[in-house]
Image (cartoon, one colour):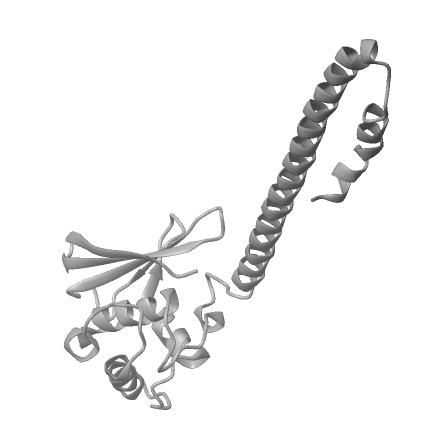
Length: 209
């Protein structure tokens, strides 16, 4: 039994004392009321505990969400949309938006069959495509997309007057084109288009960061 219930036990002891018979009706009524109040207080206290627990749970959830958002914001600050050499270094085993950006750029560079599916998973096929891209551009062919490889990829991207990049790895008439846009929230999204200039069809959209 919760400790707060024992606080009401003196009231029970009082009404249980021997009293004249003509007071018994009133005593029984009092005992009933005390029992009722005990149940109400117990319920309210337990309800309060549950409310407190729920509040603590909500506060913890909000705190965790805040920490995650701060972490994401700090990570985003480390990447410069206009300086691709600051973008995340990726290699075999990495996953996510940066890997999709690499895969999309390699598609646009004529390496679709080498890379395979744009799935955001940096596997051996993506590594092979990266090595080919590096060899073509006189870079160290290690299959890792770091500052030099990102920087070279940016050389194939045109910054438009509207502030977004158009990546054409094999020139104006590339079969695949990638657009990169940074929004006011700081997020960067890529759109992979298929077709030839000036008619393209959207194939995939992905968040880089």
